[in-house]
Length: 166
Image (tube, rainbow, N blue to C red):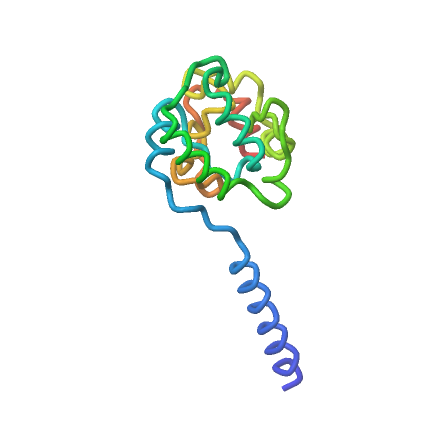
């Protein structure tokens, strides 16, 4: 009887905290077709929450020199994409940091999450660079980067495979 008096309120409290956490967990915005076509035509259409709106603004206003490429867009398409990125840019700890050169791969959270990855793994033909999220994150194209969607990239040696599981 005493266990029920403690267990039921405890379980109710845990359920309420879980529900509150689920309610505050950000959901990815509905995809923007122009963003998917224009940005996703060359690389992963990175979810806007990975960078703050200020970083996205700098990126969209500098597309003629977009990380070494000319990714210029017509004014109407640019405005459509920029408005969407501004509305859905990152918030919270991860999304408010303005990383060096506005590179997602240089953000402190990215570096911390990938600190155990062997430098040689980024150079594998199946990976190419840290910016190629889909090499390891099977659901990156849907904005999911959780551990449940991780997969080993092709070409890892035995030592790298062991480190992957640590």
